Image (cartoon, rainbow, N blue to C red; front, top):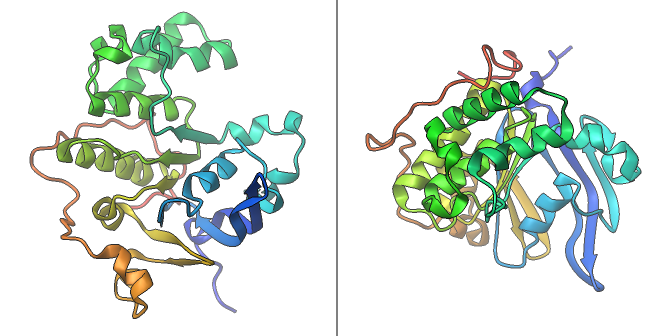
Length: 280
């Protein structure tokens, strides 16, 4: 009898014949795929291929027209709104624009979910906010600034700090590298990689940034007209089908840690969430 697959090779999220349409216009059409536990999956595809719609479906922000979305084996697409809170607590979302409130300081932006969803003391909330800023390589003094006073790279890191605020098991990222300079791109890549490796987070990234995909992804879900293809980046780059391999036709720098990038990041807590699912 074959040995059971390691936990991190089992699906954490499964999409089963999911369709989504807006005003009778199909965006996702009977898609079936899976996202391995504790791995980084990047969703690629052309404009209008349904990448962001799929991410919103995974986050529970919208409901599919048909099909099942299973998280830890539970069909969340079929749950009533009142039963979704425990599932959503497992998910963190990094929005493309950051989705920070301009009128609040960085510290208050991060503290807001803790104040709304927990009964923690203000002292403990301040401690968690400082810890999350440190986890993304930002000084605690950033907490006093407004979002408008931050550079694009710093803003993205604050948004990432908020996404991991409640220690999610699944991190969804919508175009995390969009609009950033190359050094900021590498810094965000490194932070995501370390969250995955140290804490076993299942990370799903929607991106059009091919170089980052090759450096980060364990798996790629490529959305093409009328079909979807899954595989490791290297497998897809070597595919004989030019519609598939053509997505990877770039001058790629495959080094994840350039000397210019600060690599300081502390764990979210004293130990990884699940040592069995963490890599390296």
